Length: 170
Image (cartoon, rainbow, N blue to C red; front, side):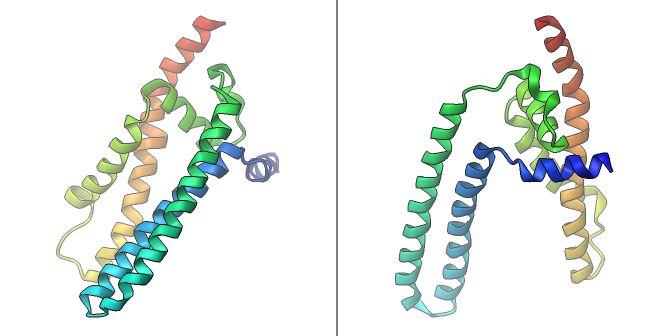
């Protein structure tokens, strides 16, 4: 039961900077969604949707910029987090992500994303299966590959470096 209680506590005590980051990212993803839908409707011949497109994009953009400014203000108030305290974080994914970002920067996120798409495309998913089975295979293979590469492979490489650095500071 201890792990379940830790999970509940981690979910209940989400840091404010993380909530602000999720908020501004959701507004920008909303802009992307509105753009895709409106482009599809314009291609279908519904040209009068352009006004709703401009209105929706502008609202999402202003909300996203406001949320991003809020995120920057929260990050400025909180300051830099002490690397010695990374291991005390309740959430295992947040802890691993902080350690990976501290050691390598933000590059592993992009590298993991590219590899998570490339590996299933080139190796894991056969191309001679039906369309629906291929969609299902990609929906399972891409997130699984990303988690394995980012949270296990990069963490496995970054953790010894992090430990050496923490032990040197102590």
